[in-house]
Length: 209
Image (cartoon, rainbow, N blue to C red; front, side, top):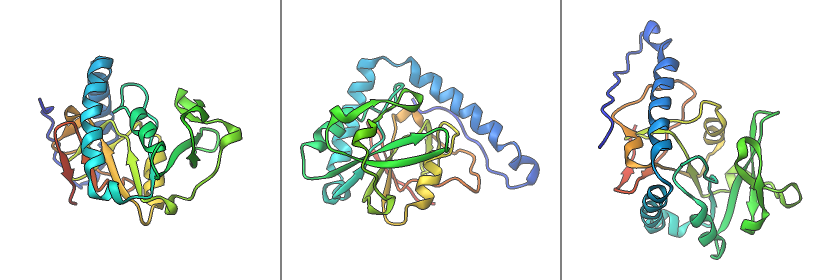
């Protein structure tokens, strides 16, 4: 069942200052729900999402795809990445530097090139890093904790993907989410960047501003 959140966006300064609190409330609420689902359920729903994603015309045509490497009960991308590695597509994954508060991109040639990195997320071992420009990527697969149907998202609040999406001039931005992560509306701040599409286990949402 879709969570019963309906937050009215009021652009008065008083309410605008409350947006971080409202976003944090949604972040915690949905993250807690996600953490409670079983691994079996995560994999089952992720498989349905994979089928829908791989069926998209834009995905079929894309030459270079940036995948996040899932963890902590996110929509699982591991099988998606493995399957694409055996295709002719060029696969790119994030490489996070917590010290520099920046996310780099690296080409991935084999699943075996990955090791636990920042936040215990799998990322390329240092000897396999091959940096890629975001403007050489056709599709960016975007994680998130909460999405609305206009493509707005709430992540972990660290800004890595907002900065990446702001720098992305050519790529299609596709969010992956379980259906319960879709809410009616979320607070939007100036630095937030919406995705173009969202794929859940039940549907593909074509987002509009």
